[in-house]
Image (cartoon, rainbow, N blue to C red):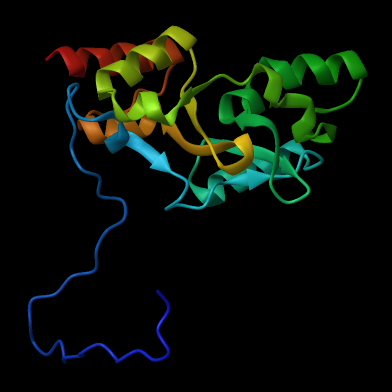
Amino acid sequence: MERESYAPLAQTKIGDANCEVVDAGRTRKVRSDSPAIDVMTDLRLIAAATIAPDTPLPDANQAMILRGVRSLFVVEGGRKLLGLITATDLLGEKPVQLAAQRGISTAELDVRDAMVPLDRVEAVDIDDVTRAEVGHVVATLARAGRQHMIVTERVAGGTLAIRGIFSSSQIARQLGIPMPSGTVASTFAEIEAALSA
């Protein structure tokens, strides 16, 4: 219930107390049997990294670097989801092949050219995630051969909303293993080895 007035909170001086700034980069360690929700980026708490479909590929790459992410939601008209683009989609063979077919440079392509369109994006439901463990997420990512997995939920009116995202690099950090710089297969080999240790 909304109040007419609010009392101010008590404040104290920090003084000479031993004090440190919380590091958002620190992540809670997990194990294979930890709740899956512990490794999900919850988009209710962290703003989704988005990009417009007509953004040139070099600008999309720069946006990923600046945000410290390896995937972006492709949206238009504010929040309407069109697809997903990952660093692999941006820097892989698809843009090179498409540019060669069109007789242009990859810098002339835009996000729409390289993204995974919405009708090809697979997702898991938040209700399943709340009952799953980290090992289930890793197995799902490995089977799909992707480094990211979208989490959806039904909201008022039956609309499907993007609730969160799983990232293999985030899971690896939380498992306490270094991320290999190679392929998706080697990434999951490292994660699965850590889970079975």
